[in-house]
Amino acid sequence: MAGIGTSGIGLGNPHHTNDVLSILGPAIFGHSTFASILDHLLLLMVLASASSSTQTTILPTARTVLSMSVHKALPEAFSKVHKRYLTPSLATITFGVVSAALYIVMNFISAGHVIADSVDALGVMIAFYYGLTGFSCFWYYRKQLTKSVHNFSCRDGPTLWRLILWSILGWSFWFYWNPVNSYTTWKVFGREIGGTFTIDVGGLLIGFILMFAMNVYRPAFFRGETLNRDTPTLVIEGSLIPGRVD
Image 1 (cartoon, helix red, strand yellow):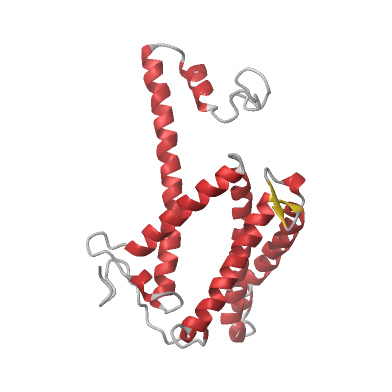
Image 2: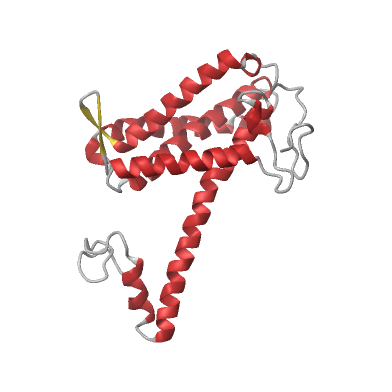
């Protein structure tokens, strides 16, 4: 409705790039008292949506950390489940605080442009872990792939998507290395690098460091002792983990 023009209510107008809702609301609803109510309702709905998006950043991570902790890939404290809310309490609080701290620091350093680069970086990370999931699926069923056409097409299919996703991953690293293709520029060892590339590689490096540290601290998981074909389901929806309740 607004278009992408650089004048008027166009989304490309630099005067309201950071707050298009305050311009679009009156343009759509008008300027009456009832229109003002609808305008404020619009802002409230978008804020609620933003809040929900923030929660979806924290909750899946907390669930993943719960699973990793139960299988002894992370400290046991993260496997504690709240008695009333039945959620991984420490994991939820920890990653909520970490997410907020990272956003505040990086948003300040980037002068408010980190969100755009973070969205692009998220796409790269999705290609990484879904591609890794596709390879894991292939490896798990590798001995059954040649038993039937169905097995080959359905269980080996993720291998094709893994190759496509990791091809996109490699191209994205090359593309976002150039600071021209990112909204922010970061100086690393005196060299200017694109913000999206920095976020992606920085996140991977931190992950590898933590993985190697946990391999030393809790090696059982990395030796395949706590998660293998015979491991029972340890976290069941609607039930608590015995002995791990706050």
